[in-house]
Image (cartoon, rainbow, N blue to C red; front, side, top):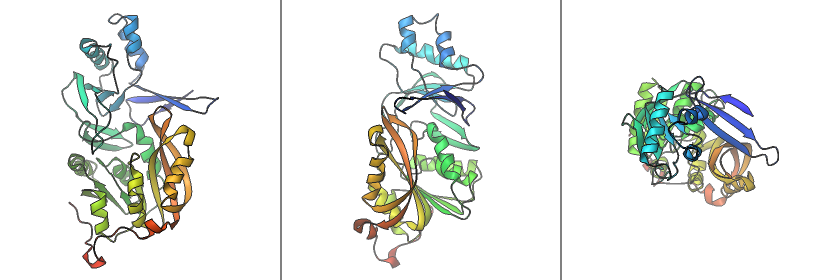
Length: 332
């Protein structure tokens, strides 16, 4: 068992590895000082029955000052949920709002539905990660605090003078961390969600960043309109990155690197991820990283690779009219 302090002062992780299967189990606890899920249950011992205590969820995420539980058993009714939320607020003064996800990430923008059960009636917060402040509405914008370590991992790979493209950029967590922790020349970010794009612009100003250029719209429509190519391309949309890999390859400089995110069942790791890339190019695999769990036995995976050669389909590239009709990217 390893205790790994996180960058966010609110949380720490307990990571265990099964010696038999090699599977990694990660339990997330939050707080300052002695606070943990254990102390939450202890504080509720006089308020809940033994059966109800067992139903209290084992973990929650913290984004800024908002605590978010993934789910609550139906047996815990509204009053009990409110009691748990208010107890959590008393135990941790840094948390101002407690919410529950009422559905899975869904819709075009992969956003969650949340219900506030205690504290301030707001879903807007400012999250601090690795020296960067990220403002967002946790219901209107997709954001995962769990991938902070992965964002820093990518930033540390970027060399001085690189031009970087972040597809599906959200409220700009990747772009901001790269700007803060690397010497990239320019970081281009494309995001289709208008609300996330607006928060991203605020975050650029909030962090006084000068080398991020943000664009609002669909990558499928924006990127084909430019001849610009990049040293490094990030594709942090694991559910459907395959659909955009051909486009990414067409915008990569010779010798450039792609960070391809996807979901892989543990029984197919890492072959399934590499197989998806080989549909479009012959890759030189630099590294394959497990970035957390998406579901039981399913990992979020990042494949860092450099393409050697393109398959015939990808080699034709994306186009949008003749070269003379392709305008340069301009801020939206």
